[in-house]
Image (cartoon, rainbow, N blue to C red; front, side):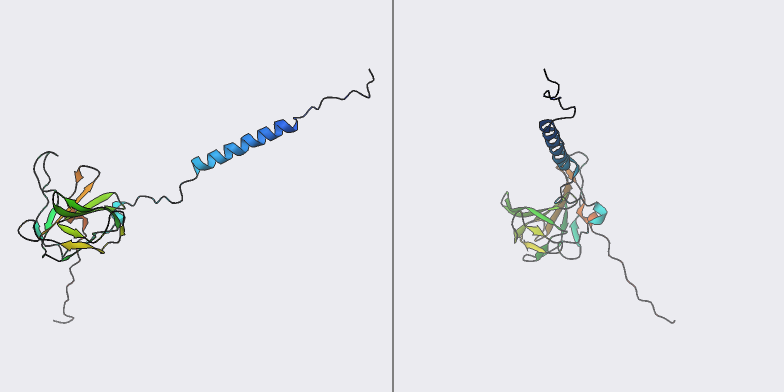
Length: 185
């Protein structure tokens, strides 16, 4: 056979092999971009110190304090009662999303999930908001109704997770006391 007619086999990779390799590399890069890149819409959880809470009604006149039971199944008072009058506006203690606004056992209740993982509950409050609605701290969420405690007290509860109740009064920073002193005596 004539040597000049015979073709030598190519020593490098053919085009099909190159295309398959490039496709595999591209697929791997796309897959890695989903694993490595954080979700742009995800907000980092805020630490408790970053979250500001305020009294949902009045200036914090507590008529019945929080009473954490020794065991989860024992009786206690898993919230604090704050003095109020029927018809008073009740405000969100902090920024969050309304988790529930409706009736529980015949009583009107509003619950808010806050950005730090805390859930606050307000009762008896006739809701002025709806579940899923975003609220700002200090925004009116409803009106106080009679029927709790000795009159129209607001029961304000707070918990983390399912059963970790916390004293809501401790969420509110104490107000600084401002005293004026004379310049001369």
